[in-house]
Amino acid sequence: MKLLFSGNDYIHKVLVVAAEVGVLDQLEFVVNNPVGPDDIIWGYTPLGKHPVLVLDDGLTLYSGLLACEYLDSLGPAPHLFPRDGTRWRALTEMVLGDGLFDAVSALSIDALKAPQDRVRAGMLRNRRRILGALDEMERAAAAFSDDVFHIGHICFAGGLSFLDLRRPLQKLKIETTDDRFDWRVDRPRLSAWYDKVIDRPSLRLRPADLGIVGTKKLKTP
Image 1 (cartoon, rainbow, N blue to C red):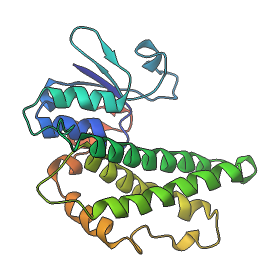
Image 2 (cartoon, rainbow, N blue to C red; image 1 turned 180 degrees about the horizontal axis):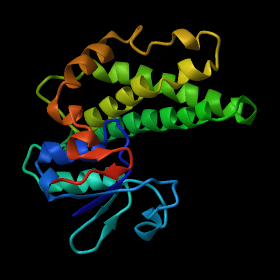
Image 3 (cartoon, rainbow, N blue to C red; image 1 turned 90 degrees about the horizontal axis):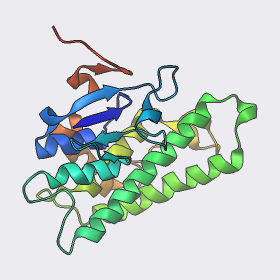
């Protein structure tokens, strides 16, 4: 299988699932700058988005979450995508964590723009998404247990780690209190869960551990 993605230094849900399932060694990594002159993503998907998983039979899975579910299907139970009555809660949490990630990404792009090019209404909307997602994640964390780990938890951890890495609210200061923003304040259950789960080996995995730095794959001797 071939995994096409941009090797940014944050938790990547496809890599996490591949590590959990034990299929990292079955993946060929193709690293690409999604906005550079050597952009090859369009040769794999008309959507032009990473990551893309190309199966051995040529079928291309255009979505990272779809790639995650396929990789999970290759492993034994218990599955990261539950197949029992807990499935829909896990998938809801998956979308919630991924939504947090997307809102952080959008505001991080705003932070790179000149102030006159930013749209305040759009930034406020993504700020509201971040705060709303965090509050809902705090409520969900009340039911988490140490012996259950699924795709929802992977996406929660991914969104939170990306928020810690990019810190878009502190950078943009959309509201006057944002320079002091700390998602852990008033979210003790989510904070305690995150501090435990982030030490899981698959969640500590970075593209650099696979010989990938930035948008390049390092050559091995």
